[in-house]
Length: 208
Image 1 (cartoon, one colour):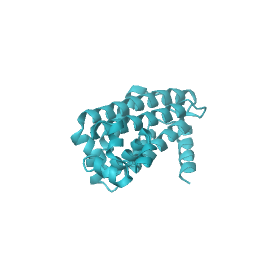
Image 2 (cartoon, rainbow, N blue to C red):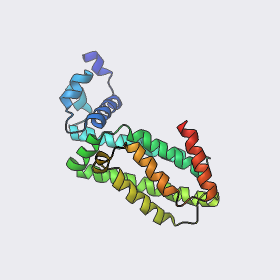
Image 3 (spheres, rainbow, N blue to C red):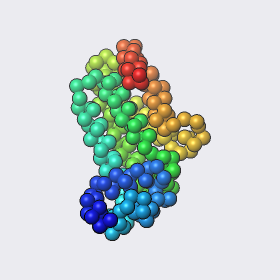
Image 4 (cartoon, helix red, strand yellow):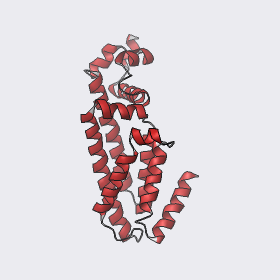
């Protein structure tokens, strides 16, 4: 046990905690449970994190930082606006698959400050993606001449009202499917005919 614990890094503990929190929720998961299930001494965990709250905060910070880096990489690529948008959508969908409704509900109800941080992260990234994508897409003839600020507000309002436990529990649909349908509905109103054809073609390629 002692030798094994020497090899367990802070990053590995974050990875383990992320899996437990995301799948089982924050409230239900204890440091004792993580220690027992993964054979890590509590001393090793507390060496890196003072409390379960700090561990949760660092898990969220690490998770959002990785998503941000991936989004930046996509947005800086040489792809057209539609391809970038679909790559971002796929990124969001793959990450949403990791989050149980129990986890989201726990954060909303019991950690309002952390939920506000997540909301701020979600808003800022969506605003940047919408603005950059629409401006690039208009130049490429893929988007109508729409105001990015209005589109962002519509998108953001839709995301906030769809990706919440109340909606997902009441409707027989996964979070990733909810995101896809939301994007499909909203994009159809702002894409040019050329953009719609390209969007449908790219979606079919990804879903094969």
